[in-house]
Length: 302
Ligand code: MN
Image (cartoon, rainbow, N blue to C red; front, side, top):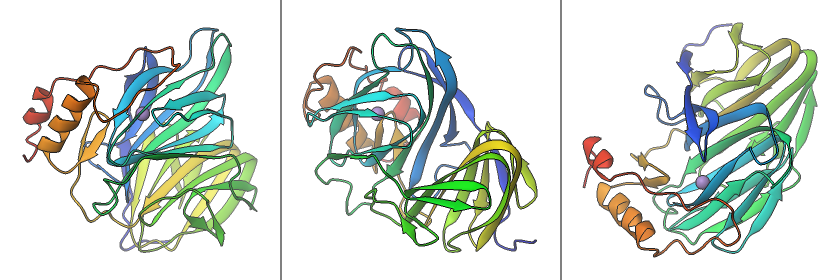
């Protein structure tokens, strides 16, 4: 099978630490690929076993201009935000927080329990017309699932094969979790106008004949109407895609904006306790914003 428009591109995820010492693999942004559609951030955490008192502990921190999209595969995370929402998320569920003009939240493993942890957190850039909207938070306990060729496809965002995710997003995107218990094979239909990328979360899969293992993002470009997927063992893959995002964004710390001046204002508002409200009950300390000098060094527009 040949692809004239969609040349694939392998991009290595890099290791990063979040909260107080929790190691993840960050696949987006990548030096060579800043976005896939409106998806502008993709952290893969686990699978990992942790002792009681360990696990995820990310204290209150602010966001603007994006949606945080948490997909839970194994384990639990407790979300608390400045709107007063408190939500424990279980495997197979999505938490979707729309930051809009400003919100703060904390994310932590439930206290005192040992456990296993496996999840993906993604950010979705809001388009200019929506990015200053009021913040909100939604928990999606049930998502559409499609059985196909030995794959179990969970429709996390957007649509697949006539099944649509209830998750509310603001640009045309798709997000799929594809899991198998063993040998499986299928043709996955794709929207040709979208660009797509795949990240193996467990095991190994073949995508149009190319083997993909955890730690590498396979960027697939636009112009593909389908993808041949196969695996010989239990595996799991995340597929993301969307209409190429037609706006230049700045991504710095936990903010998506358009100018450095907006970043400075948001950072100062966080330091001064303005705009982002308060998160009650979290055990982690509020996060400290990095030095704004780092933002200037990146040559951001003012
Ligand atoms: Mn966050």
